Length: 458
Image (tube, rainbow, N blue to C red; front, side, top):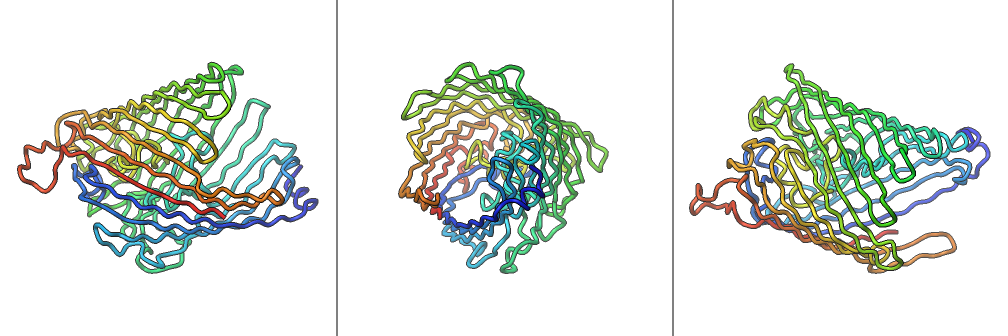
């Protein structure tokens, strides 16, 4: 059914809701904490302790029954206030700012299930199942928002094959906001300076999804990303543009065993006529119980992202992997602060990770990860001449507190939460503590991160 036929023949349905997230985060000795500056050598934070309060309200208008197509208009308003104990700060203090973090028109199953589209500001976490490309378009404000301003549409070519297109733009200085002047020039991309010339980025691409066989789904994709030039502490970083080509294969061996393989390459240039290139690959194997009840699982994965020997130079960084829009917490809450190239700018690493866990029930699970990280290139940003970044481990427990639903209209009220503890034992990539006898920072001391979180969903 076409868009106009759905609008003409369907009754309008309205829905709305809200949620509140409260979390406390405490960390100490985190490596390379931003504040030392983009592409600066290693620094260490002291004890940091803050509580974050993020209320959101949303509403939607929907046409269609979903079986013959659906049109939906969705919007969401978000704020976040923070209370900083250590170090003291007046950033994000009440009432801070209200921002529109979702505002889009979406269509699904149009023209007899052939065509889908979404236009506007929308979350991109895990988009197209490419979680090494799409995570967060606005990493500069932490996890307060994860949106991009985006147009995407796709065609269901056959039962097994699909073709998707997208174009997006991420503005460093958000204008859809109302609040105090303090947040007016807050950097949303996390690399520009907000009040300084911003680093907006943009991108577009095409994704083909299909199956070589019933057990072998795959995706092939071609993308382009560009960034505007920006200044950081007086240093100009030139405008860049790079293309990406890649593929993802997820063989399903049986009901319990699966493999995953990804390979991606980048090539482009900048306004200084430098050639930019990069490479990334992932290989993993996993087992998950297919039995009823509790579902334990185990995964072993290896992730490579290229680095650059001269990344610390003003004109360096030409062969380091650009994470595209995968600047989030997929691999670590703690270590995203220590990526040096910018907050959550994952690059320059060999990471071997073992994951163990079990799904116990709805919103109820436990997981643990453990593995070493090595630098793919000795870029000098750790302050020492080794390649071993360190050993990273995490344990997480998700739990329901008050699940409640009304079967008559599908409305629900939930309270759920989680706790996370991470630790990172730094290696010889980081500054040699012998160079700083009696100094403030203990460069070989264990770094750690702890968070508790409670969510209320209406």
